[in-house]
Amino acid sequence: MSFTPKNKIRIVTAASLFDGHDASINIMRRVMQSNGAEVIHLGHDRSVQEVVDCAIQEDANAIAMTSYQGGHVEYLKYMYDLLREKGAGHIKIFAGGGGVILPDEIRELEAYGIDKIYSPDDGRAMGLEGMIIDLMTKSDFPTGDQLNGEVGHICDKKPEGYRPVDFCC
Image 1: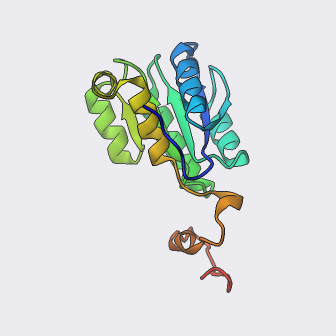
Image 2: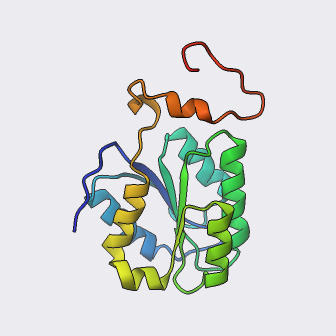
Image 3: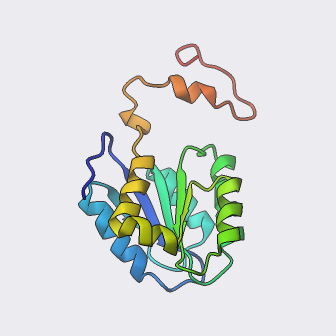
């Protein structure tokens, strides 16, 4: 199974704050790279602010997190809110944590707006590479200098204080 992206995909990966369990995200980032993604890996024990700032600075398509220590509901909701506050709501958020993230929490987070929380059931159904290809497929969209004049969809998002610019809208 392999994936060929249509756009350059840049993904920030990390393990959440107070979490030293980074073996799974290390494996996942290597599979992402082998399928054509550029990965900016921040390692373990990373705050929401660090991850969000990096994703914005690197013009990332997505953030992929692991969380095996708890606190993931608050952590990921804060990440979602901070991305929107900083005008970067287009950056997708993916996460997993084995059986630590419970089914009710998965439903709550996805209803809140987190793009996908991968569960052990997803792993059994899709396999590791299948989950990565799912993540990459959902992250395969133009960003920044790759827009090639395709700015129409940007104009649909009008944050507070937005004023249209003649060339855009």
